[in-house]
Amino acid sequence: MSIVVGLERFLRDMRYHRDRFRQFIGVSFVILVSLAGRPHETLFIIGAVCAILGIAARLWASGHIKKNKALATDGPYAYVRHPLYVGNITLGVGFCLASGLWWSYPLFIGIVLIFYPPAIRHEDEKLHHMFKGDWEQWSKKTRALIPRLTPYQPNQRSSWSFMQSLRHNGEPIIALFLLSWLYILSLWLY
Image (cartoon, rainbow, N blue to C red):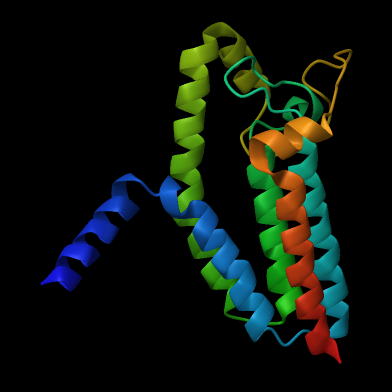
């Protein structure tokens, strides 16, 4: 009986409150492919570069977030509306490549399709509600996941903050965590 109730609650949460699970599922994916991985040297190197680029994108973006105070349109936000998600997708692809596991690709694609469209929709609605005209102008010229080639406002000054990155997301800690799992995955090479 309690298993059925728990399963029903989980399925309801997955349908209506997916965002609660997004980070847990992402972390679980990284750990799973790192422990199960059987990397091949060339793919590992390409994957590690992708993962590091994704981590760097996340660090860059997290240092520009202005959480509910101002619409971030500088730094990576001058190129794409959701640079943290771009970083997540890039590092996820990197871990797929680095792991050498064929099944990591469909699993990761499933994770992206289940979690990101509703998260993007929710964040866009929230930002639109908070910043109305500024958001409308920015979103017309800046796509959700595909970066622009030129910045939204070319002359805009950009200021990245390590403390902001640490305080709002704990991003430097997350970066170290991800790099640790990349290192663990590299141990399977030898």
